[in-house]
Image 1 (cartoon, rainbow, N blue to C red):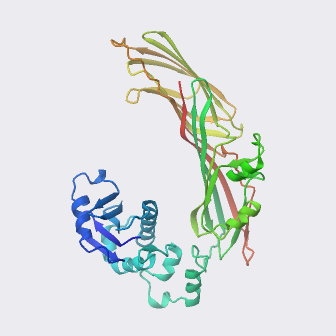
Image 2: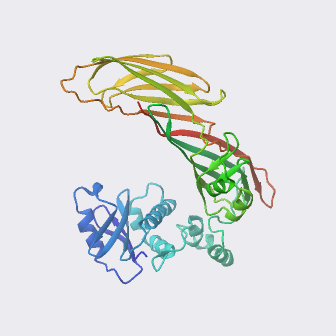
Image 3: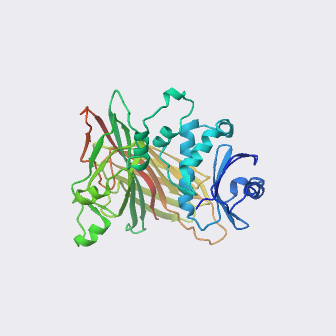
Length: 430
């Protein structure tokens, strides 16, 4: 798939190159330098460039380019995923702010990494924890001797995302359920589009090789189950997930069987699960706007905001970007809560509420003075955009039912669970 990997600095000089197939030559770097780096508007170049039958797919990190060269009809998405993972691997070895000079100084390590991650151009070993056991940086030989059988079993076995021998004084696990709400409401108040895009992010600081069992809502349906079960379920009866994907550590067979997520976690932070929900969404805010034209030069705006969540929960940094006509001369806002100011650059009134408690209602009104227009062009009203963050709330209704950690030493684990819902494209048409 990948014929060559090139590391090239911002001036076009070759740092390290590794050729896996004979269908590309060392002139590839020259072609990339001439057609991509030498151009003045480098930042506007597409990340995929086709030159004389050769495809260059690249990402830029700091002061250098990481380039994959191929002659085949390869998947760009897969190659980009590989390149971004390679950047993560370099950061784990050379530091998050590494530069081209760091790659030059440690070129032998870079060559070893290139030899491990690809086999004849196909990705094979991209697990950072396992790579650090195979390729050591700056250690004396007597400190890096490993049991060969352990490394071999991890290379060929199923658990290559976690190394053995990890120890912590305090065993902790953090679970963050993060959701983004996309909403489009029509002028009549009908929901045209609603969607929750969520992910569960975990930070695991656990000793040994623990097995975790993770349970979500009692009634959890995936898309194909919704079809086989027949009628739609009512609100509050459970969570209907349209689609989801898991980290490769999750045992999918177990999840299909009883909807529990069973896995041996990687060390540190990782994304356990991604999901999307389009049914039975708990919309955090109800927005009721009224635009009234008093005269050709006067517009009156009234807006009511209702917080549709528990009184024990408070939204933070709520902002409504309320559109006004381009010929606006002056705005006189009146707010029951928060602050409002006219943003002439965006042609909006920005109403900001630093904190809004669940169940609370608040109102906004404004008198907009406009210049008289000489033409009859009708103002195409843009939608109201809402920005918010609501801790301890999920719009999908998804929640953690239990988390159990099993390890042979039976240590105590401190568990932390947090929820956060933020705005995506949350819009109300006028």
